[in-house]
Length: 234
Image (cartoon, rainbow, N blue to C red):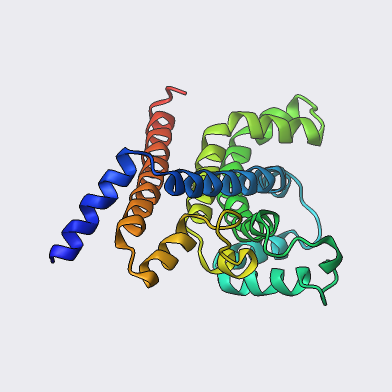
């Protein structure tokens, strides 16, 4: 019990004094996660709008596949990305394995189905409200999509935050494709795993505090956005 209390005290001290390793790992985690979120949103949000507005062959199959991929095991994603980026893989010549770029790729694959599915559900409901109006105005399909993306921005923000929360807490795929290399690919989750195995509970707890703070910030922001949407204040 004394060891745990001492670890907590040291963790608080490391957090308050902005320990160099703690800051470096935290910033790298944010950089990787935000990069993955940006790329994923560029793919997921327009795709969700297209699936909500347009009717085409295999549309239902695509929606069902995206919903199924929401539960895709991250370790499997990491394994597939590892195989593709390894020296014997088709993209091995790019030399991306064990870099932050590989970590971003893995996170994009993991969170894109999640963001797309959540965004599609919201945009589909919005489209049911706007359908008659936009059709009567003789708008083009791209104008309808842009209208949905703008008017549904609150719901899309919530979907994006859900993707951020999923990505920032990811460890399996990141460990496989990043290698948890010090000063290169070590992020919050992989560092917590490593420091715990080494018995350095102070740094592990400090990293955990940062991760919990980020998770709570995302949850509070999501709750606030949902509340403002219901009250019509944004």
